[in-house]
Image 1 (cartoon, rainbow, N blue to C red):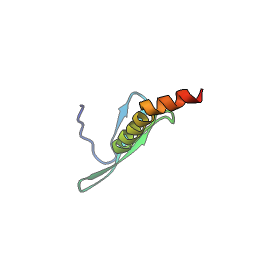
Image 2 (cartoon, rainbow, N blue to C red):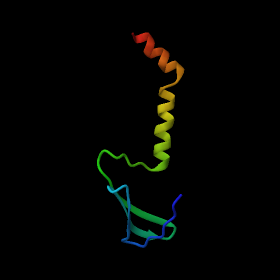
Image 3 (cartoon, rainbow, N blue to C red):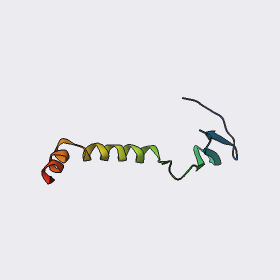
Image 4 (cartoon, rainbow, N blue to C red):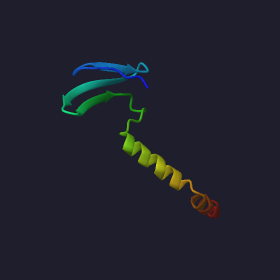
Amino acid sequence: MLALTRKKGESLMINNNTEVTILEVRGDQVKIGIAAPKEVPVYRKEVYLQIQEENKESMSADSLEALKNLF
């Protein structure tokens, strides 16, 4: 993990096309802005993990068997 120190208004670049900017610091919360191409999905980690879990459930053996029965 790379750890960086940034102040309000400062940014960092990821892979030439994604900019992360510190918008506000208030107590223990930091508001960030992310400018990325539309084809690059950006999720909060808890949402990303939920999506991954739902994808796993949809690919369960029961779901695959139901798909096979359709054909």
